[in-house]
Length: 336
Image (tube, rainbow, N blue to C red):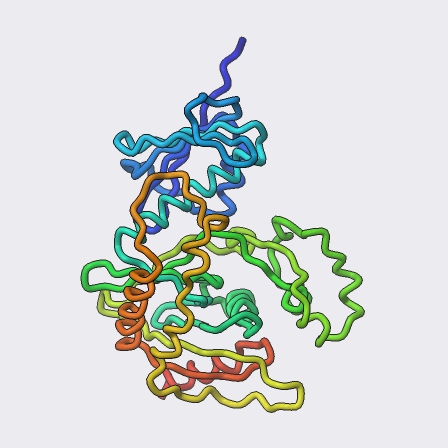
């Protein structure tokens, strides 16, 4: 019987390297949708993923996937009954390595999307249905910005620096935004969720933007590397940080210029996310790690928001889904 070759690939998650060993090339293709391959340096963890029944002492999820972690050897073994389940749990194990690294630094997570280019970072912080994804996605597709984060912006301290990065996860693109940018999308969604897009073409714009129906993309399918990290305090060319609190303008309203917000850190604190971090259904824990309690997490998040506020200027802006007026205003300010 011919032995199946084992593929070995290194992925870089901010500043941690994870090696994945598997006999299933499709698992690696799936991981490539979410993570960037890196140099084969000494790994933070090694993940061994295979289709197999698994050992009796493995922890199992509701799909029968077994996971066994060896913290001392920094090795994770995954055994799954199906290729799909194997790929998903492997992806989440890599994500957990990154979250654990951020937790060790005392990170916070903001309900915010972010874009970046040399010299400037723009953060869109707001509640649901304020247009965060729409503005960030169109800035990336139409104006060439890097898509730093969608809806789960991670901020963590690193000595005297602050680092911004994203949570590697699926990007929900709702039908209103999807129809506005479909001619710019470089690839099909990873999951179309059975959406009948042609049916929505004949609905009004108001109806399209009122629904949660949509598809799932990945950063890779948008032509974006992920996760990327932006340092705010390192180097001579420290980027300007602009935090925008967006909201949709009424259909009859005029899209005006962005307005300054005094004491904006208090508004930013409102958008600290404890929901994802402390929801075991979302933040699944396959690896042993220490985690702060919600009160400590919120307290540390407030301090990080204060540190961001020392670097940022805060704006509020009513829009109609097009980031161009805002980006133009910021560029004109920079040219003065």
